[in-house]
Length: 212
Image (cartoon, rainbow, N blue to C red; front, side):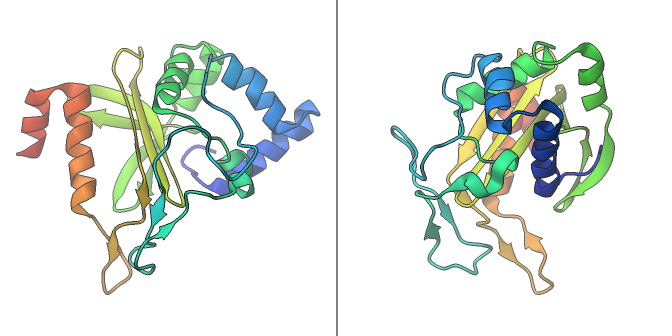
């Protein structure tokens, strides 16, 4: 439901998809989403090994694992429809462009996805709809989502018309530290990523104004 972001919910959605269609979720998503959106480098992995050149993947679990553990070879099948898909930044941009232009679902369904409620995301609040966030930046409203697993994190943001987009990945997750109360302390990396996002989507003027 709107405002509820949980990996468990995405797994349940996959099970519901299989129940309604009578088809394996992986096969259905591959045909109706990946192929329809012409995603060339997106698939459900068959092995724990990523094909082709790729970065290593590290996590430190907020400093509890030191040095950070390498999760470059890791079986993501446990995440099922909540995160067992591998992709590229180009394909993420292509996906959100197709979605927001109404090329994957109808206008009524897209409008339903964009009905948001305010929810807590870490230390911040966000407007969350059905599977996508709304991001308000100095140059307008953007839509997208982020994702994070052991060692790999991504964020993908797109304007409604798909003309302005940004997708980036990081190969270190949960690199922040916890304070004495167990709350996550923002890292300089987090502030740098926000500045990078505003600069990339809105230009130098907006980035400078946002920093002051």
